[in-house]
Length: 337
Ligand SMILES: NC(=O)c1ccc[n+]([C@@H]2O[C@H](COP(=O)([O-])OP(=O)(O)OC[C@H]3O[C@@H](n4cnc5c(N)ncnc54)[C@H](OP(=O)(O)O)[C@@H]3O)[C@@H](O)[C@H]2O)c1
Image (cartoon, rainbow, N blue to C red; front, side, top):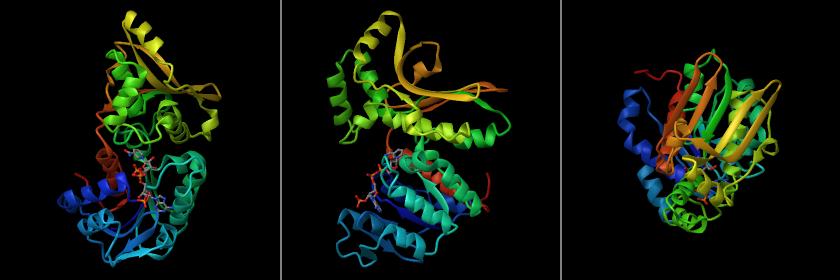
C-alpha cells in the first residue's frame, strides 16, 4: 500500500515512528506500507518506491539540509495529484476556514485516493461535501483521530451499533481542559492550573481554543454530522469555556460532585441540540471517572441503552495510532485476526 503524508509535525512524525515500530505487525496483517511522499509547509520528500522513514525523520530534524529526496517548494497538493498512491494522510493544522487541509482532502478524493485525517478544521467546514465526494469517487474517508484521539468512536459505532440509533452523546473531549479542572479540584487556582498545563505540555502556545471550549465544539460538530447525520456548523454549538470555573468547582466540592467540561449532543424531536459547557456531574456518572488529561464519551442508543468508552490520553503517539488504524481499515484485503 502506497501512502502519502501531508503535514509532518507532532502527529505526522509520531506516525512515521509507529510505521517503523509496527512494520512486522502490519506485515502479519498482510500490509506492506510504503510512504511515497512526505510534505510539510515548505516542500515534499518523494520516492515512488518508498522513503526510508528513519532518514526522513532525521532530515526533518535537520530542516531537510542535504536531503536529496526533498524538493523545496514542491507543494503538498501537487504531490497528491502527481505521486501515485492509495492513501493520503492529511495532518496539517486545524484552522477556522479548514485550509489547507480542505483543499488537500478534496484533491485526494477527486484523484480517487482514500483519505485518512486527524484534521478537525477541514471536517467542521465541509463534512457533508467531503463525505459525498468520497462516495462519488468510490473511495473511503476515515477520521477517527479527529475526535478524542484513540478513544474508539466512529469505528465502534460503525462496527457494533450499525443497526441502532444514537439518541444522545455526552463527552469529555478536550484533554487540556480536563487536566486544568483536575488541578483546580486539587486546590490550585485557575492561573496556576493553566501554568501547570503549559509546563507539562498539555497546551499549544495559543491555548484559547481549548479553554474557551472551541476545540471541544469542533469535535461536537464532527460527531453530530457523522453520527446524527446532520449538517451542523460551529455556530450551531452553544459554547462556554472554563475561564470562570473556580466558583463552580468550590460549590461542587461542597455537594460531593465533580465539574467537567461536557459536550452534549441530543436529538430533540426534529431538532438537534449541541452544547459545550462546564457541568456538575454526580460521582456515580461514568463521566466523573474521566480524570487528568483523559477523554471519554457516554452514548445513549435507542436499543442498547447506555455505552461508555474512555481512554487514557498521554500524547500524540495515540493520535498517530488512531490514524494508523484508519490506514489499515482502508485496505480491502487486510487479514482479520
Ligand atoms: N496533537 C494531537 O494529539 C492531535 C489530536 C487530534 C487531532 N489533531 C490534529 O492533527 C493535525 C496535526 O496536528 P499536529 O499536532 O501534528 O500539528 P503540527 O505539529 O502543527 O504539524 C502540522 C504540520 O502541517 C504542516 N503544514 C502546515 N501547512 C502546510 C501546508 N500548506 N502544506 C503542507 N504541510 C503543511 C506543518 O509544516 P512545517 O513542519 O513546515 O511547519 C507541520 O508539519 C491538526 O489538524 C490537529 O488539530 C492533533
